[in-house]
Length: 52
Image: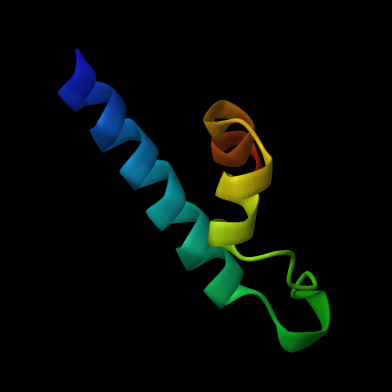
């Protein structure tokens, strides 16, 4: 069960990265705070929702 969740999260992040890389330059969203900052200031579940 845990392995399935990890695989799902990793796959979701990978798909989002591919989506962002495929966007034209004028449609690329602005960068937000880095992952380290988010993990220090927010609960883990909220960080995952932001990352996805």
